[in-house]
Amino acid sequence: MARKPNYRFEKAERERQKAAKKAARLAAKKEKADIKKDEGTDLPRSVSPDE
Image: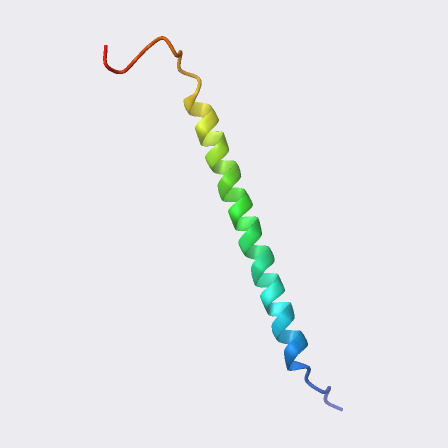
């Protein structure tokens, strides 16, 4: 016997999964940007590019 569809619940679940995936991607992107930003701070502050 076929199940009765629950369209509202299924759509809400899809949207929840999409939001979770988007949040995970954003967190990974932010983490990667922070790492890249930290790598750039290894240069000494006394050296300026104008010299």
